[in-house]
Length: 117
Image (cartoon, rainbow, N blue to C red; front, side, top):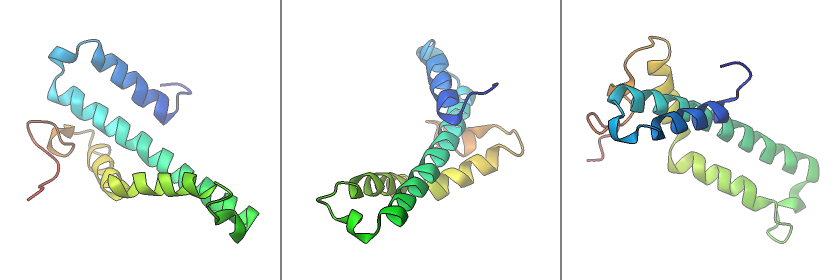
């Protein structure tokens, strides 16, 4: 993969799948889900860290909505909670070490990863 970062890898995987969207296998879908989940982890971690450090440097007054910096931290935090990053870490962790078939864990139509009951 060379010097490609997680977001570029995820985008490349999506582009590859889109080239044959009607014939995507569960394994391909699962592989893409793992790569996307890994990229999301990195984005969330970096976004929260940057947002926190901005407030460390600028002080408590920078959290006022009139300054406008709070929205960025709040948005990334909302994304991390809406689709919990802890679940993404667990999904990637279950598949990556074993290089196993990701279908059983990553919400392919054949085997959803969450029981919403």
